[in-house]
Structure formats: structure tokens, C-alpha cells
Length: 342
Ligand code: NAD
Image (cartoon, rainbow, N blue to C red):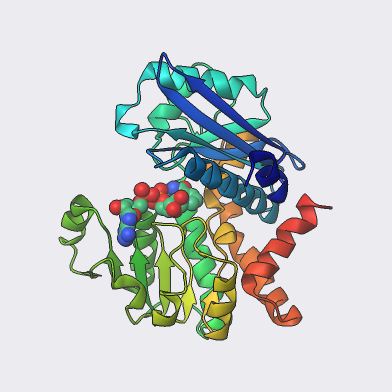
């Protein structure tokens, strides 16, 4: 599909490109919507196999950010950026050039960290543009807030659909124990949950193997491990034609972006009577935390109280899905669209 067709088919306001031979920068910024405010979303730094794949990814992720902020009731639009390349080879010169690109967008896009970028990178970018957040001077890495939101979403689903008042005694299978997964395990352990995990990183597995209360299974088995809640916290597209028939859980609640490989995946989960808590509602903790940073002086407790209200949004999604006989994904989209397209 041609770029302009792609842009209008996905309803994006703007897609910008920047190439800088001197530093090796190759970057794309996609702004899906600024209807509710500046487009907020992270910078993903990855060695994409092709520019087409980078473009498709950045546009999809930008749209998801619009829906995430809108459903969370935040006055932000949705945007995302990618830098094509090996994140291990990034230099200050490249980040300075990238910051210049962000700056040239005049505040319509505000960046933060994402896969392949760090708080330290945001500090460097922050030397050259003000349109950055998640720096050491601000609300720091959003992962802790994201995990707190996932945990609160789990509590809401447990109470309303799994038939018990707390998560004590439930078994949770976590796919990916990185920044968010690690913090999530802490909350679940404190609540008395049984825990099974999988990760591709030897370092992560070495660390987890020291814990007696966590069972490790191979990555290709985690989604089919018998449990109450399956929690995708690693990749996009985990819920697909192949994996959904193999799930042995009662609910799916995790932080990974774009968990549904296709729109039909939501229907497949519903027909198996597995409760799906839509990812862009569940994983909004990070962006809510950032909204507090940008609102002036940052108050951790106020931000985390706000993140905990993700439980209320999930409650609304579950009620709407039941009342209108639609999937939870469609209910969540409707809640976001009420604001984006009002
Ligand atoms: P991370 O990179 O710290 O952790 C991801 C973990 O998944 C790593 O330990 C990695 O080794 C593991 N992994 C990769 N492939 C795997 C596989 N096939 N099976 C099992 N494990 C695998 O990332 P993170 O910050 O914890 O974020 C996790 C997911 O949540 C990402 O999809 C991210 O986009 C999304 N997300 C994160 C935040 C946040 O605040 N960090 C906010 C919203 C959404």
C-alpha cells in the first residue's frame, strides 16, 4: 500500500521521516491523533529488517497510544517513534540528531522510552529538546507504574469474573519477566499467587532459578500452562490462531502491547469463554504516571492512586461487553473512540 493510503486508512494525522548520514540516524515518527493533546509515545530502537516493517510498526503503535490515553481519560494524543538500527550501537551524536528531529515537530509529538531505549537515553535527548519525558528529573522508568496497573486490572477481573474477592491462591503464568514482569511478580507474590514464568533471556532465568516460589517452563509452553491467569508481558501478537486453542487459563491480562495478532483473536477468546482484559487499558499505568509528571510537580502516591483506577476502567469494559454482547476489545475501543472521535 502507498504511504498516503496507509496513512489515511489508519487515520493518522502525520508521518515524518528523518535520515542523517553523519550520525547514521534513520527514524520515523507517526502521529495518529492530537485531538486530545500532544501525541505521546515512546521511541522504539530496533534493527527492523526493512523500512516497511518499521513503518507498519510505528503506525500501529501510534494508533494504540491514542486509544490508550483516551480510554485512560488523559488529555494526550497518540504517537510513536522508531529508530532503525542496533540499539547497542547508539551514540550521543545520533541521539542529538534524533532530538533535533523531535524538536522540529514543535511539540506535536512528545517522546519517552520504549523497547531499545532507556531513561539514560531520555536524559541525553532532554539536553537538546524539551519534548521528552521519563527522564531522571521526572517520573523515571514507567515500568513500575505499568506493573501496578496490570496488577489492579487482575484484581478487578478476579473479583468480577473469577468469582473470588482476592487473587490469593490463583495461579498466574507470566510470559516475559523483564522490567514490568519483575515488578508484577512482586505484587503477585505478596498477594499469595502461584507463579509460573518463561523468558528467553539466560540472565533473567538464572536470576529466577534462585527463587523457590517460581516455576520456570520453556517459552514455547508458557501460554498452554494450566493456570487461572495468563499474563503476556513480552511480545506483540501472542494471542493468535495457533496459541488461542492451546490456552488453559480463565483470563488473559498482561502488559505487552498489541497482544491480539488479528481482530478475530478477540472473538476466538470470547468463544472459548476466556476473559480478555484489553492490553491498552491494562498497560496504561506508565502513561498515566507520565501525565502526572507533565502536570507539574510529581507526587508518586497521587500518580499510583490514579493508576489503580485502571480497575474501574476494566470494570466498565466488562460491564459494556456483557450489556452490548460485544467483545471486551470492542468495548474498550468504544470507550476510547467516545473521546477521540467526539
Ligand atoms: P523488557 O524488554 O524489560 O522485558 C521483556 C522480557 O520478555 C525480557 O526479559 C525478554 O527476555 C522477554 N522475552 C522476549 N521474548 C520472549 C519470548 N518469546 N518468551 C518469553 N519471554 C520473552 O520490556 P518491558 O518494559 O518489561 O515491557 C514488556 C512489554 O510490555 C513490551 O511489549 C512493552 O512494549 C509493553 N509495555 C511496557 C511498558 C513499560 O512501562 N515498560 C508500558 C506499556 C507496555
